[in-house]
Image (cartoon, rainbow, N blue to C red; front, side, top):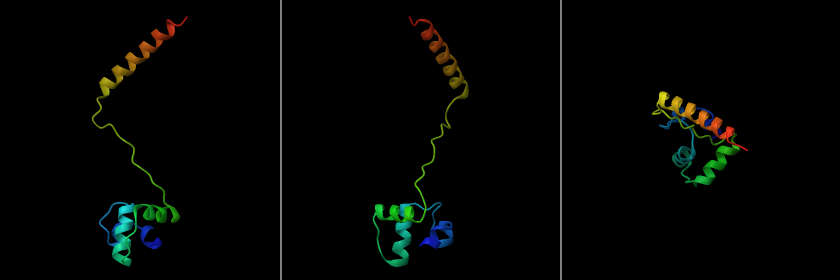
Length: 86
């Protein structure tokens, strides 16, 4: 299993982009006939030196001009609030 997860899943005959617990579960079940739980799969990946990483959210629908207007308005509001402090 260590050799398999060090390469991409496609080289091991799996139709996955990355190794994650469901892929490990499927791989072990197909190769060894053993069905592992989610936590067991994650433990094995951790023992092999892998860590869980989630992709960052990207705001692809964000409007750049609206964002700039909001940032400018917010900065002005903060300056005004700082001026009102006793």
